[in-house]
Length: 460
Image (cartoon, rainbow, N blue to C red; front, side):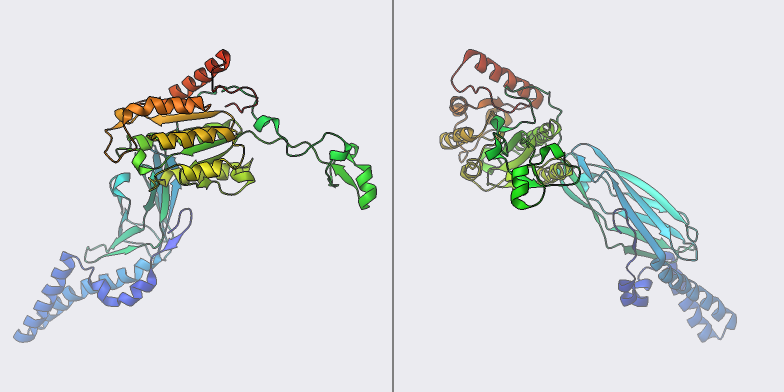
Protein backbone atom coordinates (compact mmCIF):
# COMPACT_ATOMS: atom_id res chain seq x y z
CA UNK A 1 0.00 0.00 0.00
CA UNK A 2 1.46 3.34 -1.03
CA UNK A 3 0.59 6.97 -0.56
CA UNK A 4 -1.83 7.91 -3.29
CA UNK A 5 -1.50 4.46 -4.87
CA UNK A 6 -2.96 1.00 -4.48
CA UNK A 7 -1.56 -2.12 -2.89
CA UNK A 8 -2.80 -5.64 -2.42
CA UNK A 9 -2.48 -8.07 0.44
CA UNK A 10 0.55 -10.32 0.31
CA UNK A 11 -0.74 -13.41 -1.51
CA UNK A 12 2.62 -15.14 -1.93
CA UNK A 13 3.28 -15.21 1.77
CA UNK A 14 -0.26 -16.57 2.32
CA UNK A 15 0.32 -19.42 -0.14
CA UNK A 16 3.50 -20.43 1.67
CA UNK A 17 1.64 -20.49 4.99
CA UNK A 18 -1.14 -22.62 3.45
CA UNK A 19 -3.88 -24.12 5.54
CA UNK A 20 -1.77 -24.02 8.70
CA UNK A 21 -1.72 -20.24 8.66
CA UNK A 22 -5.48 -20.18 8.08
CA UNK A 23 -6.22 -22.64 10.89
CA UNK A 24 -4.08 -20.54 13.24
CA UNK A 25 -6.69 -17.80 12.81
CA UNK A 26 -9.51 -19.81 14.33
CA UNK A 27 -11.25 -17.87 17.06
CA UNK A 28 -12.31 -19.32 20.40
CA UNK A 29 -15.74 -19.95 18.93
CA UNK A 30 -14.27 -21.71 15.91
CA UNK A 31 -12.00 -23.90 18.01
CA UNK A 32 -14.91 -24.79 20.27
CA UNK A 33 -17.07 -25.81 17.32
CA UNK A 34 -14.23 -27.90 15.88
CA UNK A 35 -13.53 -29.60 19.19
CA UNK A 36 -17.21 -30.27 19.78
CA UNK A 37 -17.58 -31.71 16.30
CA UNK A 38 -14.62 -34.05 16.71
CA UNK A 39 -15.87 -35.16 20.12
CA UNK A 40 -19.37 -35.80 18.76
CA UNK A 41 -17.97 -37.79 15.84
CA UNK A 42 -15.86 -39.95 18.16
CA UNK A 43 -18.82 -40.57 20.46
CA UNK A 44 -21.03 -41.43 17.47
CA UNK A 45 -18.48 -43.96 16.27
CA UNK A 46 -18.17 -45.54 19.73
CA UNK A 47 -21.90 -45.57 20.40
CA UNK A 48 -22.93 -46.32 16.84
CA UNK A 49 -25.21 -43.25 16.58
CA UNK A 50 -25.50 -42.09 12.95
CA UNK A 51 -27.51 -38.97 13.83
CA UNK A 52 -24.85 -37.86 16.31
CA UNK A 53 -22.20 -38.38 13.64
CA UNK A 54 -24.01 -36.02 11.29
CA UNK A 55 -24.19 -33.38 14.02
CA UNK A 56 -20.52 -33.82 14.77
CA UNK A 57 -19.56 -33.46 11.12
CA UNK A 58 -21.64 -30.30 10.84
CA UNK A 59 -19.98 -28.78 13.88
CA UNK A 60 -16.49 -29.69 12.63
CA UNK A 61 -16.97 -28.70 9.00
CA UNK A 62 -18.51 -25.27 9.66
CA UNK A 63 -15.32 -23.58 11.04
CA UNK A 64 -13.22 -25.31 8.36
CA UNK A 65 -15.47 -24.01 5.59
CA UNK A 66 -15.39 -20.50 7.08
CA UNK A 67 -11.61 -20.71 7.25
CA UNK A 68 -11.33 -21.81 3.62
CA UNK A 69 -13.61 -19.03 2.39
CA UNK A 70 -11.79 -16.42 4.45
CA UNK A 71 -8.45 -17.77 3.26
CA UNK A 72 -9.48 -16.98 -0.34
CA UNK A 73 -11.07 -13.64 0.42
CA UNK A 74 -7.92 -12.02 1.78
CA UNK A 75 -6.25 -11.76 -1.64
CA UNK A 76 -9.00 -9.59 -3.04
CA UNK A 77 -8.73 -6.49 -0.88
CA UNK A 78 -6.70 -3.47 -1.99
CA UNK A 79 -5.85 -0.37 -0.03
CA UNK A 80 -4.21 3.03 -0.34
CA UNK A 81 -3.01 5.75 2.00
CA UNK A 82 -2.79 9.49 1.42
CA UNK A 83 -1.13 12.04 3.71
CA UNK A 84 -2.40 15.60 3.81
CA UNK A 85 0.14 17.08 4.03
CA UNK A 86 3.20 14.82 3.93
CA UNK A 87 5.36 17.55 5.53
CA UNK A 88 3.93 19.33 8.55
CA UNK A 89 5.40 21.69 11.20
CA UNK A 90 5.78 20.44 14.76
CA UNK A 91 2.63 20.76 16.91
CA UNK A 92 0.47 20.83 13.78
CA UNK A 93 -1.89 18.11 12.68
CA UNK A 94 -1.79 16.02 9.53
CA UNK A 95 -4.65 13.85 8.32
CA UNK A 96 -4.13 10.33 7.03
CA UNK A 97 -6.74 9.05 4.59
CA UNK A 98 -7.20 5.28 4.18
CA UNK A 99 -9.13 3.70 1.37
CA UNK A 100 -10.11 0.05 1.09
CA UNK A 101 -11.37 -1.49 -2.17
CA UNK A 102 -13.03 -4.86 -2.50
CA UNK A 103 -11.81 -6.04 -5.91
CA UNK A 104 -13.43 -9.48 -5.66
CA UNK A 105 -16.81 -10.61 -6.93
CA UNK A 106 -18.05 -11.47 -3.46
CA UNK A 107 -18.81 -9.18 -0.52
CA UNK A 108 -16.43 -9.25 2.40
CA UNK A 109 -17.25 -10.06 5.96
CA UNK A 110 -16.38 -7.92 8.93
CA UNK A 111 -13.09 -6.03 8.44
CA UNK A 112 -10.98 -4.34 11.08
CA UNK A 113 -8.25 -1.92 9.99
CA UNK A 114 -5.32 -1.01 12.18
CA UNK A 115 -2.53 1.30 11.06
CA UNK A 116 0.85 1.22 12.72
CA UNK A 117 2.02 4.64 13.88
CA UNK A 118 4.85 5.65 16.25
CA UNK A 119 3.67 6.39 19.77
CA UNK A 120 4.76 10.04 19.51
CA UNK A 121 2.08 10.58 16.85
CA UNK A 122 -0.75 9.38 19.04
CA UNK A 123 -2.69 6.17 19.70
CA UNK A 124 -2.83 3.41 17.12
CA UNK A 125 -5.97 3.99 14.98
CA UNK A 126 -8.48 1.16 14.56
CA UNK A 127 -11.54 1.05 12.32
CA UNK A 128 -14.29 -1.53 11.87
CA UNK A 129 -15.93 -1.94 8.45
CA UNK A 130 -19.15 -3.88 8.69
CA UNK A 131 -19.37 -5.16 5.12
CA UNK A 132 -17.90 -4.13 1.78
CA UNK A 133 -19.94 -5.10 -1.24
CA UNK A 134 -18.38 -6.54 -4.38
CA UNK A 135 -16.48 -3.79 -6.16
CA UNK A 136 -17.20 -1.37 -3.32
CA UNK A 137 -14.91 0.87 -1.34
CA UNK A 138 -14.67 2.40 2.10
CA UNK A 139 -12.75 5.51 3.15
CA UNK A 140 -11.72 6.43 6.67
CA UNK A 141 -9.26 8.94 8.09
CA UNK A 142 -7.45 9.81 11.28
CA UNK A 143 -5.26 12.63 12.55
CA UNK A 144 -1.68 12.54 13.77
CA UNK A 145 0.28 15.20 15.64
CA UNK A 146 3.77 15.44 17.07
CA UNK A 147 5.57 18.05 19.14
CA UNK A 148 8.89 16.50 18.14
CA UNK A 149 10.37 17.04 14.71
CA UNK A 150 11.54 14.00 12.77
CA UNK A 151 10.61 11.51 10.08
CA UNK A 152 8.01 8.98 11.17
CA UNK A 153 6.95 5.84 9.29
CA UNK A 154 3.24 5.16 8.94
CA UNK A 155 2.24 1.58 8.30
CA UNK A 156 2.12 -1.03 7.21
CA UNK A 157 -1.64 -1.20 7.44
CA UNK A 158 -2.95 -4.33 9.12
CA UNK A 159 -6.19 -5.85 7.89
CA UNK A 160 -8.09 -8.26 10.09
CA UNK A 161 -10.68 -10.38 8.27
CA UNK A 162 -13.44 -12.33 9.95
CA UNK A 163 -16.31 -14.48 8.67
CA UNK A 164 -19.99 -13.72 9.41
CA UNK A 165 -20.15 -16.50 12.03
CA UNK A 166 -17.04 -15.33 13.88
CA UNK A 167 -15.32 -18.71 13.41
CA UNK A 168 -12.04 -17.44 11.96
CA UNK A 169 -10.04 -14.25 12.09
CA UNK A 170 -7.03 -13.63 9.89
CA UNK A 171 -4.61 -10.72 10.13
CA UNK A 172 -2.59 -9.65 7.12
CA UNK A 173 -0.34 -6.65 6.52
CA UNK A 174 0.22 -4.55 3.45
CA UNK A 175 3.87 -4.33 2.54
CA UNK A 176 4.24 -0.59 1.84
CA UNK A 177 4.43 2.32 4.25
CA UNK A 178 4.63 6.11 4.07
CA UNK A 179 6.81 8.71 5.76
CA UNK A 180 5.46 11.73 7.61
CA UNK A 181 8.03 14.50 7.97
CA UNK A 182 7.59 16.78 10.98
CA UNK A 183 9.62 19.93 10.46
CA UNK A 184 10.63 22.50 13.10
CA UNK A 185 8.12 25.14 14.09
CA UNK A 186 8.45 28.22 11.89
CA UNK A 187 7.98 31.68 13.36
CA UNK A 188 6.81 34.53 11.15
CA UNK A 189 9.50 37.23 11.26
CA UNK A 190 8.87 40.95 10.70
CA UNK A 191 10.14 42.36 7.36
CA UNK A 192 12.83 44.62 8.83
CA UNK A 193 15.71 46.13 6.86
CA UNK A 194 19.12 45.47 8.30
CA UNK A 195 20.58 48.37 6.25
CA UNK A 196 21.89 47.98 2.73
CA UNK A 197 20.40 47.82 -0.73
CA UNK A 198 17.06 46.55 -1.85
CA UNK A 199 16.81 42.82 -2.32
CA UNK A 200 17.46 41.30 -5.70
CA UNK A 201 20.75 42.99 -6.56
CA UNK A 202 23.02 40.92 -4.45
CA UNK A 203 26.40 41.25 -2.93
CA UNK A 204 27.77 44.73 -3.14
CA UNK A 205 26.30 45.32 -6.57
CA UNK A 206 28.28 42.51 -8.13
CA UNK A 207 27.27 41.44 -11.59
CA UNK A 208 27.79 38.12 -13.27
CA UNK A 209 28.75 39.79 -16.56
CA UNK A 210 30.50 43.06 -17.38
CA UNK A 211 28.82 45.48 -19.74
CA UNK A 212 31.22 48.40 -19.63
CA UNK A 213 31.74 48.66 -23.39
CA UNK A 214 32.04 46.85 -26.70
CA UNK A 215 35.29 45.11 -25.65
CA UNK A 216 33.60 43.72 -22.53
CA UNK A 217 30.53 42.28 -24.25
CA UNK A 218 30.25 38.48 -24.14
CA UNK A 219 27.93 37.50 -27.01
CA UNK A 220 25.89 34.37 -27.43
CA UNK A 221 23.99 32.76 -30.27
CA UNK A 222 20.71 34.23 -31.42
CA UNK A 223 17.59 32.59 -30.01
CA UNK A 224 14.05 32.84 -31.28
CA UNK A 225 12.40 35.86 -29.69
CA UNK A 226 15.61 37.85 -29.04
CA UNK A 227 15.41 41.57 -29.72
CA UNK A 228 17.19 42.34 -32.99
CA UNK A 229 18.47 45.57 -31.43
CA UNK A 230 20.77 43.40 -29.30
CA UNK A 231 22.50 41.85 -32.33
CA UNK A 232 26.29 42.19 -32.02
CA UNK A 233 27.35 42.68 -35.64
CA UNK A 234 31.08 42.38 -35.08
CA UNK A 235 30.68 38.93 -33.52
CA UNK A 236 28.10 38.00 -36.16
CA UNK A 237 30.63 38.72 -38.90
CA UNK A 238 33.32 36.82 -37.03
CA UNK A 239 31.33 33.64 -36.34
CA UNK A 240 29.16 33.65 -39.43
CA UNK A 241 25.87 33.50 -37.49
CA UNK A 242 23.69 35.93 -35.62
CA UNK A 243 25.15 36.75 -32.20
CA UNK A 244 23.45 38.90 -29.55
CA UNK A 245 24.69 40.70 -26.47
CA UNK A 246 23.89 39.05 -23.17
CA UNK A 247 21.52 40.90 -20.90
CA UNK A 248 22.71 42.06 -17.55
CA UNK A 249 22.04 39.26 -15.06
CA UNK A 250 22.17 40.56 -11.50
CA UNK A 251 22.76 38.03 -8.79
CA UNK A 252 20.04 37.45 -6.25
CA UNK A 253 20.75 38.62 -2.75
CA UNK A 254 22.25 35.81 -0.69
CA UNK A 255 21.74 34.63 2.85
CA UNK A 256 23.60 31.88 4.67
CA UNK A 257 22.15 30.43 7.86
CA UNK A 258 24.76 28.81 10.10
CA UNK A 259 23.54 26.33 12.71
CA UNK A 260 25.82 25.18 15.50
CA UNK A 261 24.98 21.54 16.28
CA UNK A 262 27.87 20.66 18.60
CA UNK A 263 26.60 18.51 21.43
CA UNK A 264 28.90 20.14 23.99
CA UNK A 265 27.50 23.59 23.17
CA UNK A 266 23.94 22.79 24.25
CA UNK A 267 22.38 21.35 27.39
CA UNK A 268 19.08 19.64 27.91
CA UNK A 269 16.77 17.78 25.54
CA UNK A 270 13.16 17.78 24.44
CA UNK A 271 10.97 20.17 22.46
CA UNK A 272 11.70 23.08 24.85
CA UNK A 273 15.49 22.70 24.87
CA UNK A 274 17.98 25.27 23.67
CA UNK A 275 18.99 23.15 20.69
CA UNK A 276 15.39 22.86 19.49
CA UNK A 277 15.06 26.65 19.82
CA UNK A 278 18.12 27.09 17.60
CA UNK A 279 16.85 24.60 15.01
CA UNK A 280 13.45 26.31 14.91
CA UNK A 281 15.18 29.67 14.61
CA UNK A 282 17.25 28.50 11.64
CA UNK A 283 14.13 27.18 9.93
CA UNK A 284 12.29 30.46 10.52
CA UNK A 285 15.10 32.54 9.04
CA UNK A 286 15.41 30.26 6.00
CA UNK A 287 11.69 30.52 5.24
CA UNK A 288 11.65 34.27 5.87
CA UNK A 289 14.57 34.97 3.55
CA UNK A 290 13.17 32.75 0.80
CA UNK A 291 9.90 34.67 0.98
CA UNK A 292 11.91 37.88 0.62
CA UNK A 293 13.49 36.65 -2.62
CA UNK A 294 16.93 35.71 -1.32
CA UNK A 295 19.05 32.79 -2.44
CA UNK A 296 19.69 30.86 0.75
CA UNK A 297 21.61 27.90 2.05
CA UNK A 298 22.00 26.10 5.35
CA UNK A 299 25.47 25.45 6.80
CA UNK A 300 26.29 23.42 9.91
CA UNK A 301 29.35 23.40 12.13
CA UNK A 302 30.63 20.20 10.48
CA UNK A 303 31.00 21.99 7.14
CA UNK A 304 27.92 20.53 5.48
CA UNK A 305 25.90 22.80 3.20
CA UNK A 306 22.33 22.31 2.03
CA UNK A 307 21.61 22.49 -0.84
CA UNK A 308 24.98 21.19 -2.01
CA UNK A 309 24.21 21.84 -5.69
CA UNK A 310 23.47 25.04 -7.56
CA UNK A 311 25.39 28.27 -7.91
CA UNK A 312 27.93 28.26 -5.07
CA UNK A 313 25.66 25.94 -3.14
CA UNK A 314 22.81 28.46 -2.88
CA UNK A 315 19.21 27.71 -3.76
CA UNK A 316 18.33 28.89 -7.24
CA UNK A 317 15.19 30.73 -8.27
CA UNK A 318 11.78 29.37 -9.20
CA UNK A 319 10.92 25.73 -8.81
CA UNK A 320 14.47 24.84 -7.78
CA UNK A 321 14.17 27.25 -4.87
CA UNK A 322 11.02 25.49 -3.65
CA UNK A 323 12.71 22.11 -3.92
CA UNK A 324 15.77 23.41 -2.06
CA UNK A 325 13.54 24.83 0.67
CA UNK A 326 11.93 21.41 1.11
CA UNK A 327 15.37 19.79 1.23
CA UNK A 328 16.56 22.20 3.91
CA UNK A 329 13.44 21.70 6.00
CA UNK A 330 13.80 17.92 5.67
CA UNK A 331 17.40 18.26 6.84
CA UNK A 332 16.35 20.31 9.87
CA UNK A 333 13.62 17.78 10.64
CA UNK A 334 16.19 15.08 11.41
CA UNK A 335 19.28 17.09 12.35
CA UNK A 336 20.91 16.08 15.61
CA UNK A 337 23.93 16.97 17.75
CA UNK A 338 27.30 16.53 16.12
CA UNK A 339 30.43 15.15 17.77
CA UNK A 340 32.46 18.18 16.72
CA UNK A 341 34.34 20.35 19.19
CA UNK A 342 35.02 23.45 17.09
CA UNK A 343 33.75 25.60 14.22
CA UNK A 344 36.79 25.25 11.97
CA UNK A 345 34.99 23.28 9.25
CA UNK A 346 32.24 25.85 8.99
CA UNK A 347 34.85 28.60 8.82
CA UNK A 348 36.70 26.81 6.00
CA UNK A 349 33.47 26.62 4.03
CA UNK A 350 32.43 30.22 4.62
CA UNK A 351 35.78 31.82 3.85
CA UNK A 352 35.54 30.66 0.24
CA UNK A 353 33.43 33.57 -0.96
CA UNK A 354 31.02 36.39 -0.25
CA UNK A 355 28.08 35.04 1.73
CA UNK A 356 25.86 38.11 1.64
CA UNK A 357 23.81 38.15 4.85
CA UNK A 358 25.07 35.66 7.45
CA UNK A 359 22.75 34.59 10.27
CA UNK A 360 24.23 32.24 12.88
CA UNK A 361 22.71 30.33 15.78
CA UNK A 362 25.46 29.41 18.23
CA UNK A 363 25.46 27.36 21.36
CA UNK A 364 27.87 28.30 24.12
CA UNK A 365 31.26 29.45 22.83
CA UNK A 366 34.61 29.39 24.53
CA UNK A 367 37.23 32.03 23.82
CA UNK A 368 38.85 30.09 20.97
CA UNK A 369 35.59 29.36 19.15
CA UNK A 370 34.42 32.94 19.60
CA UNK A 371 37.58 34.04 17.76
CA UNK A 372 36.87 31.58 14.93
CA UNK A 373 33.29 32.83 14.67
CA UNK A 374 34.51 36.43 14.61
CA UNK A 375 36.66 35.72 11.54
CA UNK A 376 33.62 34.46 9.60
CA UNK A 377 32.38 38.05 9.39
CA UNK A 378 35.19 39.05 7.01
CA UNK A 379 33.64 37.23 4.04
CA UNK A 380 30.05 38.27 4.55
CA UNK A 381 27.93 41.38 4.36
CA UNK A 382 25.72 41.90 7.37
CA UNK A 383 26.22 39.27 10.08
CA UNK A 384 23.81 38.37 12.88
CA UNK A 385 24.56 35.98 15.71
CA UNK A 386 22.22 34.55 18.33
CA UNK A 387 24.05 32.99 21.30
CA UNK A 388 22.16 30.62 23.55
CA UNK A 389 22.23 31.74 27.18
CA UNK A 390 23.16 28.52 28.96
CA UNK A 391 22.40 29.97 32.41
CA UNK A 392 18.69 30.19 31.63
CA UNK A 393 18.33 27.15 29.37
CA UNK A 394 19.98 24.75 31.77
CA UNK A 395 23.00 24.25 34.02
CA UNK A 396 26.36 23.79 32.40
CA UNK A 397 28.60 20.77 32.86
CA UNK A 398 32.26 20.51 33.83
CA UNK A 399 33.07 19.41 30.28
CA UNK A 400 31.14 22.27 28.75
CA UNK A 401 32.60 25.11 26.67
CA UNK A 402 33.48 27.32 29.58
CA UNK A 403 32.00 29.40 32.37
CA UNK A 404 28.77 31.16 31.52
CA UNK A 405 30.17 34.36 33.05
CA UNK A 406 32.31 34.83 29.93
CA UNK A 407 29.28 35.07 27.64
CA UNK A 408 29.36 38.86 27.60
CA UNK A 409 33.00 38.70 26.61
CA UNK A 410 32.11 36.39 23.70
CA UNK A 411 29.40 38.79 22.60
CA UNK A 412 31.88 41.66 22.76
CA UNK A 413 34.36 39.71 20.63
CA UNK A 414 31.76 39.14 17.92
CA UNK A 415 30.55 42.73 17.99
CA UNK A 416 34.06 44.10 17.63
CA UNK A 417 34.45 41.92 14.51
CA UNK A 418 31.31 43.44 12.97
CA UNK A 419 28.66 40.97 14.09
CA UNK A 420 25.31 42.05 15.47
CA UNK A 421 25.36 39.61 18.39
CA UNK A 422 22.50 38.98 20.79
CA UNK A 423 22.04 36.64 23.71
CA UNK A 424 19.05 34.27 23.53
CA UNK A 425 17.74 33.44 27.02
CA UNK A 426 15.13 30.80 27.73
CA UNK A 427 11.69 31.90 26.56
CA UNK A 428 13.05 34.50 24.14
CA UNK A 429 10.92 35.11 21.05
CA UNK A 430 12.85 35.07 17.81
CA UNK A 431 10.73 37.85 16.29
CA UNK A 432 11.64 40.13 19.20
CA UNK A 433 15.33 39.36 18.82
CA UNK A 434 15.01 39.94 15.08
CA UNK A 435 13.64 43.45 15.68
CA UNK A 436 16.30 44.09 18.33
CA UNK A 437 19.03 43.14 15.85
CA UNK A 438 17.65 45.67 13.38
CA UNK A 439 17.59 48.39 16.04
CA UNK A 440 21.13 47.58 17.16
CA UNK A 441 22.51 47.79 13.63
CA UNK A 442 20.66 51.01 12.95
CA UNK A 443 22.06 52.51 16.17
CA UNK A 444 25.61 51.46 15.34
CA UNK A 445 25.32 52.80 11.82
CA UNK A 446 24.01 56.12 13.12
CA UNK A 447 26.71 56.56 15.76
CA UNK A 448 29.57 55.23 13.62
CA UNK A 449 30.54 52.74 16.32
CA UNK A 450 33.32 50.24 15.80
CA UNK A 451 32.15 47.13 13.97
CA UNK A 452 29.17 48.80 12.27
CA UNK A 453 28.86 48.08 8.56
CA UNK A 454 27.91 50.55 5.88
CA UNK A 455 26.17 50.32 2.50
CA UNK A 456 26.41 47.45 0.07
CA UNK A 457 24.94 44.82 2.41
CA UNK A 458 21.86 42.77 1.74
CA UNK A 459 18.72 43.60 3.65
CA UNK A 460 16.03 41.34 4.92
